[in-house]
Amino acid sequence: MSNSSFYSKFLIILVTAIACIIVGINYRNNLQTPPIAQPNPSIEKKVELPPISKIKSSPAELPAYQTTLAFEQYKPRYTTTTIHPSNYGARYSTDVDGNALNNLPIVVLHETVDSAMSAINTFKTPHDDDNKQVSYHALISLDGTIIYLLPADKRAFGAGNSVFESTSGIETVQTNPNLPPSVNNFAYHISLETPPDGRGTSNQDDHSGYTESQYKSLAWLLALSDIPNNRITTHKNVDRSGQKIDPRSFDFDKFLTILDTYRQSTEDKISAR
Image (cartoon, rainbow, N blue to C red; front, side, top):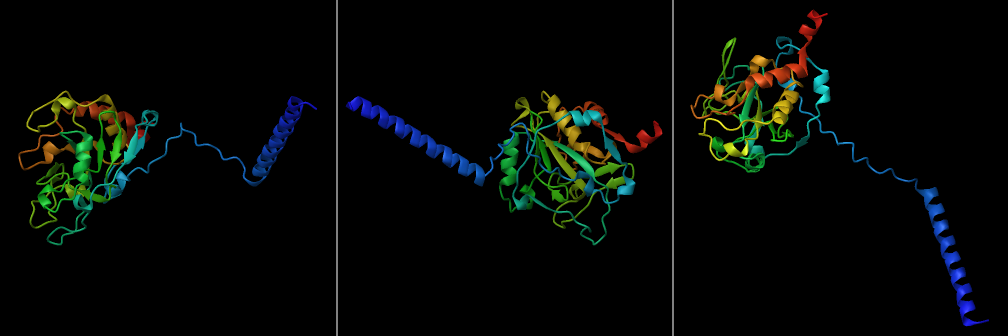
């Protein structure tokens, strides 16, 4: 037998043996471990939404809302991050004098003045000084992404010396004897990322305004709550220091129009039948 013929037969036998081994291994593996399904990249991991409506102290005093088809059709991106505990606290049940607190919740709108990431970095930084502690419950970036920072049952330090003027009168709470009263104990603070042309200074009266995605995401977020339109306000309106003018260039009418398309009062729905 020639050397070439011998090597040809040897290669055929070797390849056949390797093939048999591979088939045997695959057969054994299939018996032991069923194939694992690969994750579907089109399925987005869900983030638990903060229970905004749960911060209301007396549900019977607030209207109930139901989300609409327009709400279901808008799907904002959302994510969460953690901030340093020195920049937020628990909601108080009594004020500094021991009086029971029963304020209905409000929403206070802000702007970041700088980028969203800059604001988040500030919130992640520990602050021992009470006057430098700051936070919001949520941030909405220019592309409409909702960034959750705090659950609704926590007290964000979004407004210092502040008062809310409601149809029932003046509302404010003092929880620290060394600081002026504020709305923080019953407020849900949301900030919009400032556009580039308005960053770096809070003294400029206006800027180019917020994106369509920001208005839609803000309305979508608040459609999850039972907080009525007349208890949604701005940092400028509640501030008593005379220094806050945010959110600058905010179109309240535009926002409320979108919000009213994303939710409907259950009372209005019943009366319309």
